[in-house]
Length: 130
Length: 128
Image 1 (cartoon, each protein chain N blue to C red):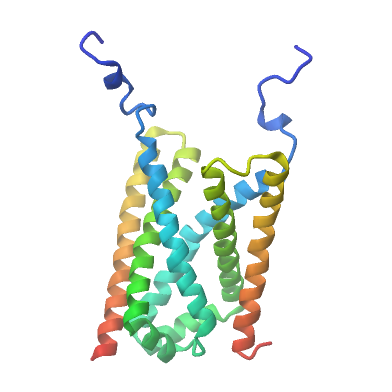
Image 2: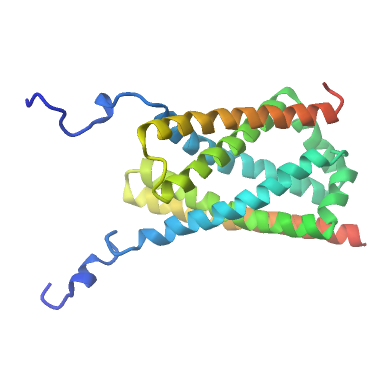
């Protein structure tokens, strides 16, 4: 074997935050598609069907599992939004310098979490829970 | 081979700019999602009544009804493109890939159709 780096392979990549951002972008996007869209359809369908159907939806949404799903979807949205905007920047050919790339890989992941917390603080305060 | 031009050979094999269409649509619908879903999220922050009456009245008003309808089209389109990439990346058998993408098309159109009909019902119930 040559004593220099050969073709990169999954097992010999040095770990970096951009990898986490990349897989979280896919996880949050596909999570929104596979879980978020059915919830959206349930919400709209219940609203269209009347107060009784909406009561069933509201009961499920305000159960502990309902909160976990809704908070998870909110995180998925804000995470996908932040890393998606990063994709737009990368698409125009900017942000590939190692430092910049690392900063925004971490930055978008943090922004997704911060916006999720901020959103729910406002919502829970409005509902009188906080 | 003798009767083929070089571009004829390349078409459909990935090097003749066929991928660009999917890539661009993913971006166009992403911009649509950015505007539409932010409208929904900010509306949730501004609305006070999370019950049936509050939401039904809100969805039935003209601007939210239009925004939600456009959101449905943009979001289901974007999700369909994104899930297609998931299928293409992780499903190795060509037949299964074809079947899943066919199913995906039906699910995306059915979901968007259901959502649009629901919005229409809420709007017309509000007008009655």
